Image 1 (tube, rainbow, N blue to C red):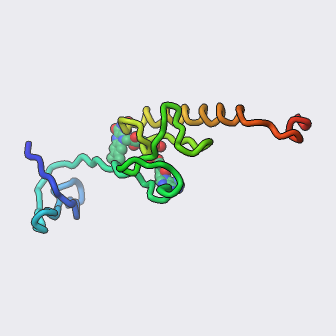
Image 2: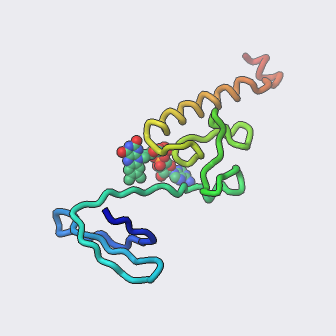
Image 3: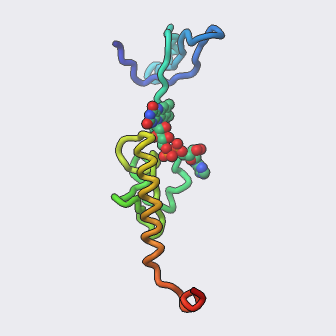
Length: 123
Ligand SMILES: Cc1cc2nc3c(=O)[nH]c(=O)nc-3n(C[C@H](O)[C@H](O)[C@H](O)COP(=O)(O)OP(=O)(O)OC[C@H]3O[C@@H](n4cnc5c(N)ncnc54)[C@H](O)[C@@H]3O)c2cc1C
């Protein structure tokens, strides 16, 4: 096994039926390299799409939304779940569980809010 670092993938090549290789630019030398391959496993998605939240919620240096064990963010009443948060291990089953937890936490938050007098009378 050869580990290639500082590679910017630019193109995946195929023969119409299967992958035959990929091209990448070596970021350190700017050299374009073509690598013949029989298959590719893509691992992407490690950079959260959270730029738009940076002025609203506390984010980690990686841009993940910081949550506590209940999925609560630094803003009361705002909960987050899944890959975009600081929860370790970005996997489907974890994101699903975290989503359920955040929803329960939101419910728990709402039922503790004081009820306005007119709402209490209407109930
Ligand atoms: C290539 C690849 C392979 C993977 N293989 C596996 C695997 O084999 N097993 C496994 O358990 N996990 C795997 N994962 C991880 C798994 O996909 C994630 O853990 C899971 O999808 C996280 O769920 P999520 O709901 O947190 O985020 P996502 O599934 O990423 O959902 C986030 C959603 O929010 C949307 N969105 C983003 N920004 C905004 C916005 N501003 N407004 C509104 N919507 C927005 C996105 O379009 C997306 O639909 C893989 C991931 C990748 C990328």
